[in-house]
Amino acid sequence: MENLLIIILNAVLVSTVMCLADRVNNHIHIFVKRSFCMQCGHFLRWFDLIPILSAVLTRGRCRYCHNHYGVHYAYLEFIGTIIGSYLFSDPLTWITAYLLLFLALEDWHSESIHADILIPGIIYLFISNWGDLKILTTCAILIISLFLVYYRQVMGSGDIPVLVLLALTTTSQSFSLTLLLASISGLLYLMTHHARRLPFVPFLYFGWLGAILFEKIIIFNSL
Ligand SMILES: [Zn+2]
Image (cartoon, rainbow, N blue to C red; front, side):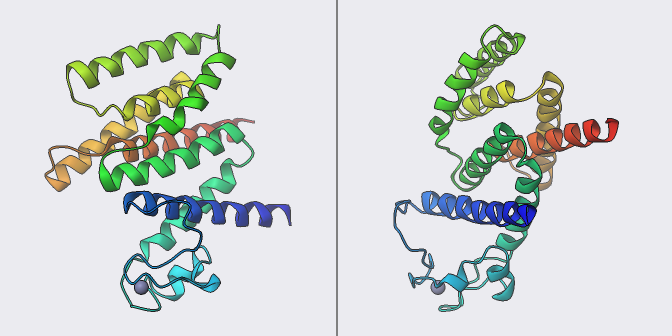
């Protein structure tokens, strides 16, 4: 029963984060109370808002105007629910996963993010980890990031808080693996899409998830 409640909670949270990202990306105030179709403006009923199921049953179409918003919502909600439920026992990683999901969706859509939502958490982690070797590593990453953003201009300024947060919440091995996976997947994207630039946060998110899940599975299997 407890596991079922955790799954339902995570399904609702993933759906809510995706809805918030959609609203921000479409310049709609996040405190508009009722959900509605972005195409026809029709208010959605409760059965249009069931995570995963609603998108599957309607095959990713609005029931009112038949606009195809995409069945990929169901896939993302499903994968997000599994990952969120798996990470639920580790609150810091769990919260980081939802913050990064929101920022990754935002970056993918508009190539700019509200990275300032990470600042309170970063300040808290800086204070609570003060004296730890992790602070030294984080400062080195911060200096390198500032150099890459403001001198070489090869990264966006929004990437800095994300990198700092990841440095503060992961082990040095996981952080290195995160950067490796993010860079490889980003390069593959650039090559296959013949693009010259890419939103980096989604790839950092992907790399971080890969590193975290790899670390947790390795630790679990070694116990
Ligand atoms: Zn519609």
